[in-house]
Image (cartoon, rainbow, N blue to C red; front, side):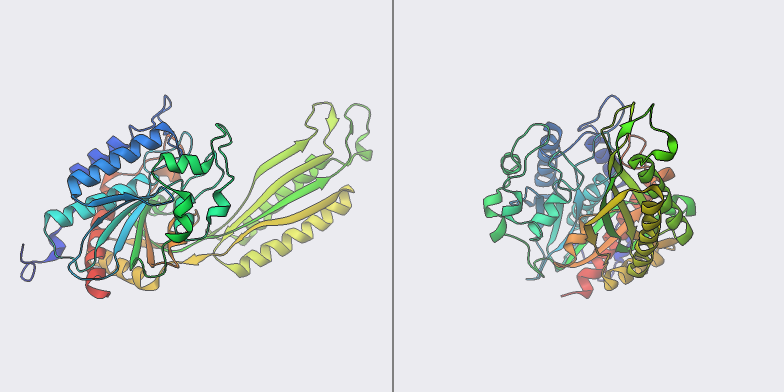
Length: 426
């Protein structure tokens, strides 16, 4: 075994060439004619990726590889002491026509870090685990972060029992079985607090903060809260040719006005960590010659600041009251999601910042405005996230791109963070 007492561990670096080759290889699974990636839960490409990962882990890490009841993939390399493992990972699935880096970066960096430490024969006290979670992305089963939510007990066996694929109609339980999971065992094999000592996830930012700042790394401070309302507007359907403008009660125009009101409220807040969207809009009867009589839409607000959220919702309520009276329509509102912001572990943030500082690398501290598997690992382990840039802020599209040099920097930061935490934590 190599002697690290008289040698700086800071000299250990990830293998750039190997990392690049694996990123390119994973990008071949599910690539379509547009250059995007189709790799949704249960697809042939999902299965092919899983088999490649399992083979890679078994052959190069010489590690134990297994599939948990939620069909998450795991590998473990042992430590020198009887301590809870340090885990690193992300997800390997992709949205329809998605990008080559979302999720893949985190899984392949984890693979490289563990392989490099094994090659160096570095005597880690804690066991090391890699995880690639199932179905982090939206999918035909309409359950995102499926793997992390299931294995941490947020989703139970009963929640998954009757879920089906919206396209193929296959039962989710059968899909997970095909992938090596077993929902029947889920409730008895969930991860419990301290089953893992640490969970680290590296991910592309999926926004413009790093790109615009010219920096390569961001330490994630929290994962944003997400608030959603389903709003129904009841106007009056009528003939589009014979109904004078002054007699109309147009549900679509009411919805449009409400959407613009939300935009104004969010713009007035003037914060980069606050966004609002109306991304779902159904019109009834949806005919060219009928004034829309009913509309259903979903308002989404994302922020880590609960006080700001309350201010936005209160202002939106005032606008809605005014619009409802002015247009003589009825508006019904129902909260369908009120997910709190989740902070990343303060000790992990400090260690990441210390390591980045030792490399003389400028960085940002940012909240994540997208959801990630890490949010569900917080009750289980000390959890932290590291971001790398998304060029031009593009993600979930074929144009998604992150420079290899930035990924390598993140890999070296994560590797040194693992070494630091292995020393600091019992």
